[in-house]
Amino acid sequence: MAPHIGRRLRKGAATTAVAAVVMAALTASQAPGLASTARDRHHDNAAGETPAPPSADTPIDGGSSYHTDLPPLQKPGKPGTSIDLPGLPDDAAAAEAGIPATVLDAYKKAESALKESKPGCNLPWQLLAAIGKVESGQAGGGRVDAEGTTYRPILGPVLNGNGFARITDTDGGAYDGDTTHDRAVGPMQFIPSTWATWGRDGNGDGEKNPNNIYDAALAAGAYLCAGGRDLSVKADLDEAILGYNRSREYLATVLSWFEYYKKGTHEVPDGTGVLPDPDKNSGGSNGGDGGDGGGSESPRPLPDPTEPGGDHSPTPEPPTTGDGGTETPSPETPSPETPSPETPAPATVARLEAVGAAKLTATAGEQFADKPRVRAETAAGKPVAGVWVQYEIRGETDARFPWNATRVSRMTGSDGTATAPVLRAGETTGSFTVRVTAVGRTATATDIAATVKARPVPQADALARADDKDLKAETGGSFADAVGVKASYKGKAAAGVPVTATMIVDDAAKATDKPTENDKGPYFKDAEGKAVRTLTTLKTDATGKLVLPKIYTDDHAGTFLLRLTTADGTTLTIELTVTERAAQPTEPPTAEPTDQPSAEPTSAPTAQ
Image (tube, rainbow, N blue to C red; front, side):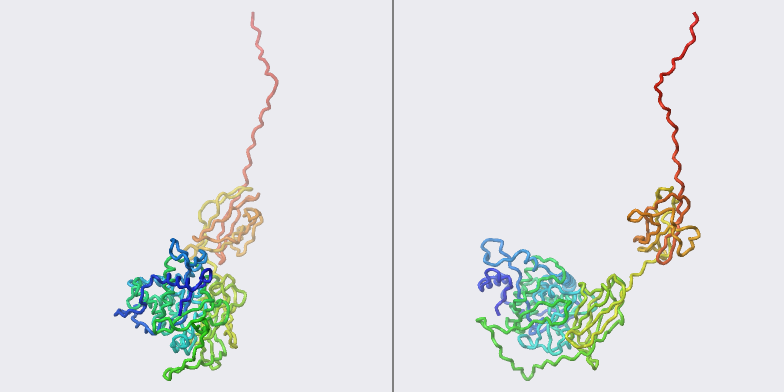
């Protein structure tokens, strides 16, 4: 099968000659000889286990199809170096270099884990990214929830021997929903039998889920490192990749993305990654001979996680002849030893039964402790695997699934159960329901009740003044010292405690639960500068302290009371003293100046 060149070759000189030059340029650094090298090695893995490596006749993805889009081609920087190769705008190249945040984090965490458990392997995360790109388009552009699980299982073609390897069911449909044949599953496309050996728990949730990018990336890394491989050695690198899918085209495609990602990548939001070109075919091998042969199929874009129904597995295209025509394959006759079983009709789903918690509860702003979960059953109560189940949030609520989704879909496993992703409560309190339906089935829907409780109000069993200064002021002025208090609960500072401050009437009100607000004396000011004598929006800080706004005085003198009250009834009463403003001293009148000349003194006549 000739290598497919990505959509970028349709711009400009996308001729057969140019395509050949492009592929040659991308694979020039590959050493000849892609066959496995048989060596006597110690087999172990990241968990310290020693599983036997899979048969060379059964690649990790079962020889399924894969995406053949190639990395963006850069125009050469030096004269005379393949100047006829098509280029790509910088923005398009930058988009292809972006890897969804959760997917990128999973690759890097797998690399870090294997540096400790398999230091001699030298696994670079860019290799996992290259395989993830080719196998699933980086989990379908990063369509994963907060825990790294794909919104829907990513399924490869049915491995029934028609264009692909023939692998009869090994998991009871638990992972792929098919109880007759196996299918590759998840963002790294493990066939169930391989996952049974190599599955890992990469995110520490106690489960090994091939549809979780953290689990799948760590498992893929352990698989690539098997047999004592050193992936910094070219022969070991080639051998590891061929163990994933025994196709020379596959090897060349993965290596091209590997080199591309090593030149630089960046993080993009989950769900915004570039999907493989839906107009290009995906190639693959049947497995078993390490060659190029096998079927091809045309992938379709992954469905929106909020839309119900549909199986996004690819639809095989008929092979083509050398002159571009369509070749009609002759039907294969199964051998007597391995008859091809007929696919049984799907079981009828009579009902969906909620399992687990009878009612889901959470505090505002927090995750629900339990996930919505149902079991698909026949009328006889038997479980039904492979059923798409949709969960939809209904009611006056801002609770949401990951990515702010109100609808998500999951497939039932071999036990008939399907579990929704984590549900997070919003700020709206009250009850709502999660409506669960079987997509495309006539089974009766079921409702799961859920309630969001208000956040608990912080408590305080004591209020005290922050200092012991006397609070005094004159009429028509304001208190120079601010009123500061501190709240505590069981001897520790009580943060975030709501406090109400009220100017109350008299001493008799000290013991009154609901004292009367005073209509004279000290007051606060609202945002418009008007006098108010009750404040209800006060709250202690992280250290349990509260400083009240400035307090003003009117023209009434005397002793006044300020009552501080918490939501749970703890009180503190503070005395405020207001004195008459002192009279201003009167200055004596100033003598008016006169213009009359002063009288000349008279002297007694001098005796002669």
